Length: 400
Image 1 (spheres, rainbow, N blue to C red):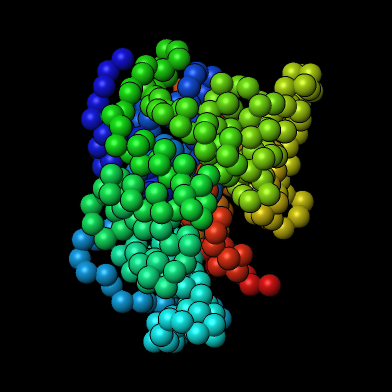
Image 2: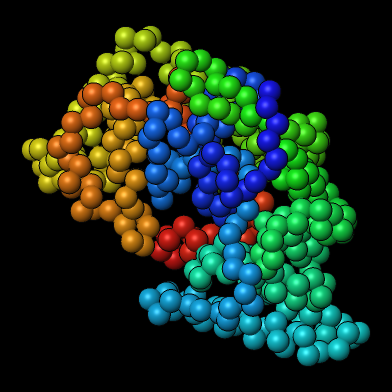
């Protein structure tokens, strides 16, 4: 086994940053192994579809400018509610910072200001409704900490790990993690694992079979299990992914189910594992026939045969066909999501051009027997703390 120094900008893996939804292709090897993005000279492009991204677990920190933090910028096309809400939160922070400590009423104002600063840090860290701005996020986390927010130390710790306003320095996160233990011990355990993981050398191992890509092993497993046993949803997701990589589906399902009440990603992973278990219990011939039928239905919806084209329905059917075992459906999904629309999401013009592409011939793909079963991680270890309205803004969903 060859030991390589950790280098977050030169790994032979796909990485879209820790702030994007991440997913890993599952392999049958132990422990969790992440395929490299290059095989047989073909580079697989990243996509904007959360269900179709490949990444190593939290291995690549967000890339930020070392310049001074930029001022708040909101797109003129943003939801007016977002503009008004950001201004309200900023005003609330300013008012809270000007009141002296002591009186009960002043304490309440400072608590409200701390919460507002915390939310501003979260939305700038993730780019939820505003331009993603890690240096600005760190400033808001610092102000939330000074106002007494109990979770602000988590934001400051992750900024050290990822490098919000300076190069990543996981060791510098330890004092913040120690402070976080008072407010959320399970999350502190997870962040401690993440910091140690980032500082550890990468262990490269050869793939499982001929043509299989090199993989990266998951270190500090005992430390991660401790965080999972304490109930942290991100640790539960990570251990669930490891169990899924070893094809221990029932055990993986239990981990995802435990995390599901606090993580929509974990709930989606649980649904995917249930589909895998159901497929494995189905007769092979029946499953192959179902995949073929779903692929034909997806093509009709994609091409508009017998009815107007319905790209949303086509995507749904392609995904169902892929789950049922259709490699061709999986290749079509990879092509569709390889060229997203400028604002994210599906590029309708590109999808129209792909309607009659013949993908029946085998293309170079990852050497993975479970191609198509993609399980995800949360965008960051802070994501579950972001208010629901801002999660919707981050996902580009309309407000209800």
